[in-house]
Image (tube, rainbow, N blue to C red; front, side, top):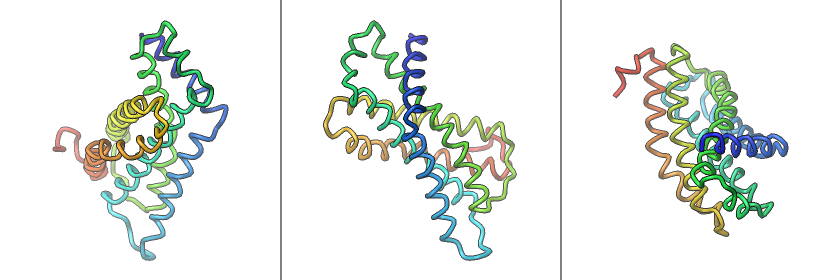
Length: 196
């Protein structure tokens, strides 16, 4: 099942990089959000760590919607969804492959979001990179599991994109709030075990 999942993930990553629209749209939207929020501060005013992490995770939440809408659109545009379901791959491998592809694309988007948040929002950075990377990866994994699950539920539904955007944000909320809380604690040099 794992090799099948990596095959599906590889296919989706190749399609996403060949077209370039999905990841580029997510990155540009995230950078635009960071830039617009940076304009809301008075000259010389600094954003708090909580505001900065909230903006970072807001960019990530919107990116997840765009990424999974793109990943599940591949089969709809080419009418290959039935062929994938009839393939010898287990359905779980298809879902896991979409989740892995979405996770890799989201991490690639966040490579742009995090430095932009630090620079444009003028955040003070006291965090150790490894615990922050682990915390971001953990929240990303949860966001991508939710995104792939909701995307799979909407597969074959004419209102798939509307379903994805309406349902996914309430499901993402606990993950985003925990990401903000952990990120703020780590930016203030707290240990992971000290955060509750």
